[in-house]
View 1: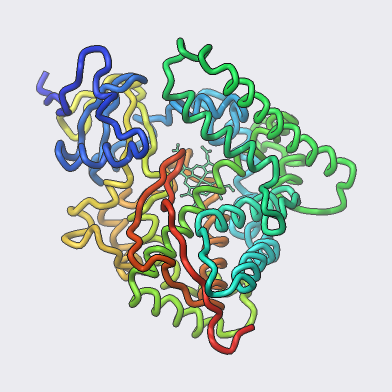
View 2 (view 1 turned 60 degrees about the vertical axis):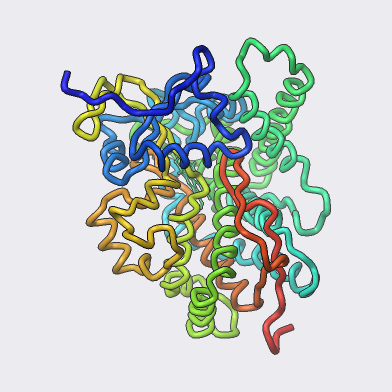
Length: 462
Ligand code: HEM
């Protein structure tokens, strides 16, 4: 047929390559194989054969939405038990996706996100206050405190609900339920379905957790209906918005699906981004200093305002470079709509699952050159970033593809820039253990593992 077989490591009969995968950090295995077999290889996994793709050129081809769609498989199928056809987990043919997408897109646009600035600022201030009070000798569990930040911010901005995570040692029951639910969703996806009866306790807790998630969201909805009092946020858009195309409104169940979806999709991703960024900055003092100087020059010692957010080009470059090296969603999936050939020579069957290894395509030397693995924010300054993404389209894809790309990107961006600015304005940071080197923890997203830092108030500040 003129096509070339897709290479890959030999597997065992029955189990294929399952035992080759590092169970704690599958990402590492995928990247190691990419180093060995190149931009495309196949693996036989319990869920079926997978084709793993990791060059800019091939990923660019897979971004063509006329030929490829987002499949919902693996852990996402399990997550659907709680959020059904909510935006993130909807299948291509489900009409609720379009209704919710059209109603919600404007609410996630720049103007609407700017309207959330005050609330984002309030939660960020709570974090800064906590670190100031704990003082320079207290090791900070970075990912935990950023996760409190992102969850509290999302809940406050999207539905006016306060988890108050900085005021309790114990996390809110909703947050625990969500964490356990996501972990168990991942575990269920790895277990052969025939063995499900071996885990009755886990199953009961799983469905109880889902109940907690949905009941809490229902409570928020009921309260809002009673006190509609003029608040304009995502929840009010969901309650009142009408789809311009179908004239439909969102059902209560669909609103609950999407409220929980925002919390799930938006918290670890943004918290991981902030955590990796602080690690990278602390390790690269020159970049750290430039970022801090920018904050001092543009904002000074006064309050941070919404107008400042787009006037911090170096911070923006730092965040882009951090998402390039450490994309918090390191792999996304696609599937061919029809039998096709990619890269001019590899046959891919209809519905074949394709894993897009962003963590590797973001290191493509054809795009990023010799120093592709180094942290160099300068290459991500506006003009350079524009040039790069024009010359090598889809070389930077941390927010996903096309129609199914991240709806929360402006939200995450404003929050991340604000938090970076506020923290650099007020503190100096150092590693708690000067010898710490980056380790990854992988769940549905990735974040640094066992990363502790210390925060010292800058001179003259109280
Ligand atoms: C989709 C990344 C923050 C809500 C996605 C996708 C990626 C992504 C890669 C596509 C997934 C796929 O193709 O399967 C990120 C990153 C974030 C972030 C790196 C932070 C740095 C947020 C926030 C929210 C959010 C804050 C909510 C407020 C969503 C939703 C989708 C999505 C609802 C599904 C969109 C659809 O399919 O219609 N995100 N995200 N994300 N994200 Fe984000």
